[in-house]
Amino acid sequence: MEMINVTVETGGVRRTLSYPGRVSLADVLRDAGVPFCAPCGGAGVCGGCRVLASGMMTEPDSFEKRAICGADILRGVRLACRAYAVGDAFVRAPEAPVTAADAAGTAETAKNVKKERGRYGVALDIGTTTVASSLVDLLTGERVREAAAFNPQAPWGADVISRIGAISEGKTTVAELSRLVRGTADALTAALGAPDGAPRVIVGNTVMVSLFAGVDPTPIGRAPFTPPELFGKYIGGDFFPRCAGAYFGSDAAAAVLAVRELTGGDFILCDVGTNGEVASYAGGRLCVTAAAAGPAFEGAGICCGMRAERGAIDSVRIESGRTVPHVIGGGEAKGICGSGLCDACACLLALGVIDKSGYMAEPYALADGVSLTPGDIRALQLAKGAVRAAVDIVCRGAQTDGVPIYMSGAFGSSLSARSCARIGLIPGGAREVVPIGNGALRGAELMLVSDAAKEEELALASSAEYVELSGSAGFERLFLRSLDF
Image (cartoon, rainbow, N blue to C red; front, side, top):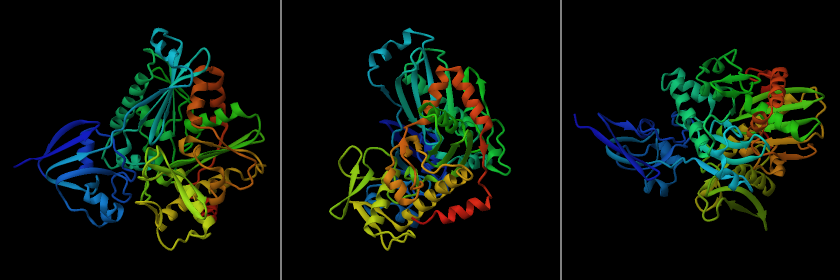
């Protein structure tokens, strides 16, 4: 039997794999160990796993033709899960590098880190999409260096349910997903220049930290959604703070800790992403929940959606009755990320292109080759409706009128407060909306430096009133009510 040879290139490195018959490009990339974005986990319904390919392959199917513009199809853009090599072929996937940067004013300190064992530690936030980290001076509490990398589990889905499904269906294993994310965490630790044996505090949503620790998270994916482990302990020298529930992990609890450092009063916290985590702290009572917002806020499942990287429209304003987009890095727009999507929707509402129900008659061009479709607006409605309903749920019975709302996470911190209120993502009566960046990482840093902070996080997570939204009639009513703009 004549073998099919498929060459994979990423970051300038090429590798050729051989197969006895036709094979999907997604399987080739997985076999080559190349991280790539597959928001729907390979179900072929999101259009997010775009790669550049050539050679002997199946023709683009109807979904690919809808998801990819004609010009891109002509230059070889394909969906990895829908394109199959039927003969020798070539596929190029975007590189997912580890990026590291010195914190302000500490570059000289970073050069000397290796020489000072015991003085530095590492905070790690294991996100579903991105693994973020920082090097912390344990004597001063200062952040010395930062590094981030793409979560290599992404080929098995953009959300935790997709990854649990991949394990349950035998597509991958807990051990394999654990190996992948541990390898990335170790690479980040090395990129930070941390001394050998430096202490680490690891936070993340309950599924992510379970996978990191090698704990099977599949019970979280089915009723009664019981986590096999809530942590709050050391494992192999790494400290894992406590999770508050199945879908309110130690990352969100760490963000609560970070907000508590900023304010002594009541607050609402929103960590908006694929899994929207929401907390209300009022009168000493902490009420928490999480809503499956879906990947729209990450740019996935959106016609021209992309991550917040060079070429992405990240904000939109109105000027002389027209929308004016801002593109990360300048130059031509390649797509739109979550913050740009929210801004664009708010602007189109103001211009009357979209009505209160979300109706939009036809696609709207934001830039050459970048448009918003009625389907994109619907996806945003579903995502923001889930988060807003979760906010309303945790605020029930609490005096939260006029309290500040803290927005955590890379996406949440890049949002325009005005746009958030205009589309109904957050209550319009909030006293102020405060972006705090990566609150989870900041909370992990506090626990890295202080045992008292570890104890406070444990107390917060243990005493939190966790509201399970799945199957809740009250949540469904609020969700439906929250869909309108």
